[in-house]
Amino acid sequence: MAERPLTGDIRPGVMPDISAYESAGGYEALRKAVSGMSPEDVRKAVTDSNLRGRGGAGFPTGQKWSFVPPGEAASLQKYFIVNADEMEPGTFKDRLLLECNPHQVIEGAILGAYAIGAGRAYIFLRWEYRLAERRLREAMAEAMEKNYLGKNILGSGFSLELRIHTSAGRYICGEETALLNAMEGRRAIPRAKPPFPQVCGLWGRPTIVNNTETAANIPPIIRNGPSWFHGLSLTEDAGTKLYGVSGRVKRPGVWELPMGTTIRELLEGHAGGMREEYRFRGVIPGGASTDFLVEEHLDVKMDYGSVQKAGSRLGTGMMIILDDRTCPVGMVHSIIRFMARESCGWCTPCREGLPWLEKILNALETGDGRPSDIELLEEHTRLLGPGNTYCALAPGAVEPLQSGLRFFREDFERHIREKRCPWR
Amino acid sequence: MLTDDERREIEREVENCVNRREACVEALKVIQRSRGWVADDQLRGLSDILDMTPEELDSVATFYPLIFRRPVGRHVILICDSVSCWVMGYEDLLRHLKSSLGIGLGGTTTDGRFTFLPVACLGACDRAPAMMVDDELHTDLTREKIDDILRRYP
Ligand SMILES: Cc1cc2nc3c(=O)[nH]c(=O)nc-3n(C[C@H](O)[C@H](O)[C@H](O)COP(=O)(O)O)c2cc1C
Ligand code: SF4
Ligand code: FES
Image (cartoon, rainbow over all chains, first blue to last red; front, side, top):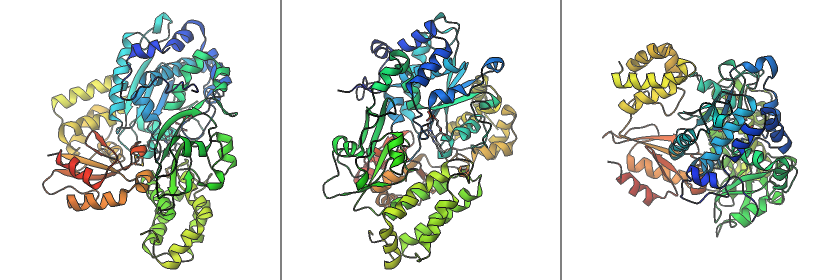
């Protein structure tokens, strides 16, 4: 079986204590880094590994770290934050790592902090992940006891205080600058960029925010080296990826597989294909804020470049399946309704546009659609698109709408023609 | 105003923070844990500890759906209304819960037993539909399963 550095040692239902993690090679990377590698060496290994952010945008991790100011400014307090807010609809991958492999997330946070010279690190955790919080706290206490955390880690002179910030709901808190405001005890609206958090983040200090899965990749990269990491993948984007499938499939779930596994293999091989009496119609490949793909795309490789070429985004890599007995308009409506509620209200196109879209889609669903509505919907996908808002919530929200209008146009038109939802 | 226990717990949080206001969300939760919700009076009490005005604290508190600024029932039901749960039958469960509880989303039963709220994707989409009651996650929901679950929360 292919190597699974993130989940290979997870046993269902078993909380891995620190000795289980250590005997599988855990904290070796930390030992190796603090005893024989400079922070710059760690940064270089991560850059060479080609690790890209697993939080949705796919930004190269090493490059992100390189924006943290060196030299003079290096004496400033800096922060390393693990984003464990996971609220993107259809996404349930970080939960697995936090609940079943918390030590690896923690080791990733320590290594990330070491690499950028941060003295303080946080795990930003959504409140609803109650079990994850308990396990993270237990794991942190174990790591403290072994001096993997705290003062003068393993005698290296490097000290790190790690804390959990437990949030209280609201999707926007996962956006990295909204997250910083949330941590500072402010309303969690995103910040105007620039300045970017790498230069001016938490309390105005250089700050790195990385997704949970991104952080969990760091220890194996340091332990085994960049070329090993490249070898895990089937394509040019390195490593493994946590992929998931939800919807009317036989075996919904989450699996760690080589980067570049195809949609078909995920759907048919791992998820067991569609349930009896249901047929495949489309897939939102990477969490709710990505464009639909359809039958003709089943052989697309799930890596950053290939999914983009097919007209969507890898996003979180967690697929939501549309079947032939589910209304595509209703599915888009569900997403837009969510996004309208979760909008932080800072920019006008998002604050006003999403509720308007929600009303139009609701009208279509309840038989009050008008022929001009399609054009209105299309116009909004442009008005809420990239470049018009402070954050990516609105542009992401309209992705499934714009591709839904393309691939399922006949369904939208039927709602208007027949003055009802044909699925109800 | 705040009790001594609440003050002590909040001060302990503050000690671990870079700035006092960093403890704000946690402090609101401390109050909510002991009282169920956060009233104006407690915001004023908190204001002194955190160096934030009551108005500022209110603006933060109202930003979060899980900080309650009104009394809630003994148990809080959070039903996931995001897309995977929607595909897997959310609407039918919503109808069922509304009629069994006799309230809509945002409501509290007259006997004060349940408050019923929507929540963002619970990260359990492979076991959809899903909901939480208080601290507990319930998955693969059906009408029957919901009836069983509700019975467990007096
Ligand atoms: C509305 C919104 C919500 C987001 N939620 C999350 C989240 O819950 N977890 C996450 O890792 N990234 C989330 N992101 C992406 C973050 O802004 C950020 O890009 C990411 O945490 C960076 O980590 P990475 O470089 O390791 O991918 C969200 C972005 C937006 C616009
Ligand atoms: S796009 Fe929406 S969520 Fe993002 S900052 Fe603007 S109003 Fe807030
Ligand atoms: S959509 Fe309901 S748990 Fe994810």
